[in-house]
Length: 212
Image 1 (tube, rainbow, N blue to C red):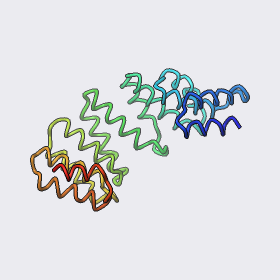
Image 2: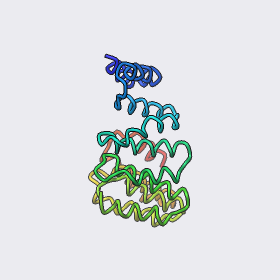
Image 3: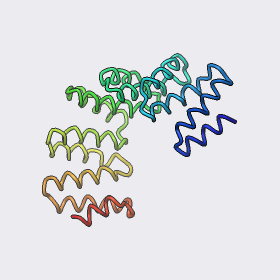
Image 4: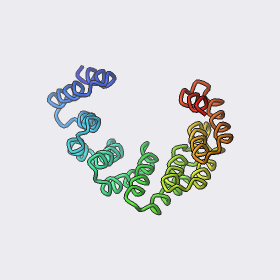
């Protein structure tokens, strides 16, 4: 019953009440890893990284929770500003994990933030061979070039995914933004129209086109 109550509170985004409900579960059933995991995620949501890490660390010894716990521990380390430790933790997330791609993307981003741009791009290049259909990889790669004001390379990084990603809606949108920054409004409008071909009700694309 308390587990059902906790899940309902989570659906309602009432994280404080959900945490109290999971705490009831811990009182009724000691050493319940599911309760520790869920309370850890709530602590992460409430920006309490130390508490999240404390609850999630013991779960690394349990195969059922290991990969998920590691990913969220890395998020908590990132949240508390320990970027190097977070990157090392993301690196340990296994390829079989549902969080593998996102962990690698976060790791690349952190290395970029720490100034190791070569390492960041190396991680992305590896990801492109492992998951060539993942749109976010192309977006992140382009972002790195954009941050360095290398507009042509940023566009090139995006166009590489146009024929690999099934519905490259976000890629078209970012291309429109980049062409706009280059004052190439004709090409920018063509790209944003492709977004609307895929998603006619996309409010951001409609706004962009109307403004253009």
